[in-house]
Length: 314
Image (cartoon, rainbow, N blue to C red; front, side):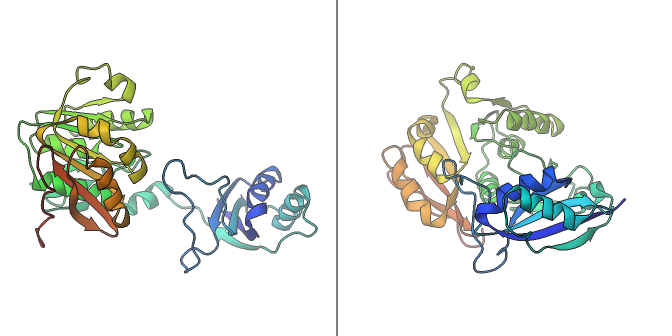
C-alpha cells in the first residue's frame, strides 16, 4: 500500500486551524513543521518547562497531511481552506509515500552508541560491539535518556570517571534510568531514581530489570515516604534543565552527604554561571566538561571551592 502527502506552506495564524480542517476533510494524519528548518531563519519552538508556546506553529509553517493515494488532494485542500474561512485554497505540492518495513527502517536509525572509555548503549536488536565493555541494553522510547544527547553523555562520562564502589547514588529526573544503571554497573551499592513522569518510572523499572540492575525508582511523592525519605547520598546526579535545577537547589543540595558529589546537566554553557550561583549558598559548583554547547557542573559538599574541570583528553 502507498500514500500521498500534501505539503502546504502557511502562516502561523492559520497552521493549527488548517491542520484540524485537513483531518476533517479526509486526511489520515497531519503534522506541522518549521518551513525554515535548516536555514538561518529556523526558530526553536519548544524550550524549558514553563516556556511552552501557545500554539505549535512557526512564523512560516509547513503543514504535511497524509492521504490515501487515490484521494482527491485538491478537493481536500479546498474543503479545509473553506472550512477555516480562507478566500482561496493555498498552493500545495504532493509527494508519494511508499510502503516500507517501518520497524526495520526505524531500527536502522539506532546503532550502538559508544560513550566515554568503556560504555556502550546497545539496542536490543544489535550485538554489543565490545562484549567486555559496560553494556546497557536500551531501546529508544518515550522516556528521555539513551546516551545520544550531550547532557546524558556528560553525566555518564562523569560517573565513569568517578566510580564509587559501595557508595549510594540518587538519579533525580531519571527518565529512562540510564544514569542510575551506569552507577549500579560501576559498583554503587544503593541506587535510587526519581522522576515526575509515571511513564518514565515504568520505563526505568523495565530497563533496570532487563539490565540486571537492582534500583529503586519513585515518583516524588512516593520517594518522600520511602525508606530513602531522609537519606543523603554519596553522589546526586540531576540531568534536567536549568530553570527547574535552580528552583531545586536547596532540595538537591540537601540530598548530598557530607563530602559527597553533586552533578548537574541539562545546562547550556551560557547558563552555567547562573545555575552555579543558585547553588552557591549550599555547594560550590564548577564546569566539569562541555559538549556541543551543553555543560555538566560538579562540586563536593563541604569543599571550599569548585573542583577542577576534566583534564584535556581525559
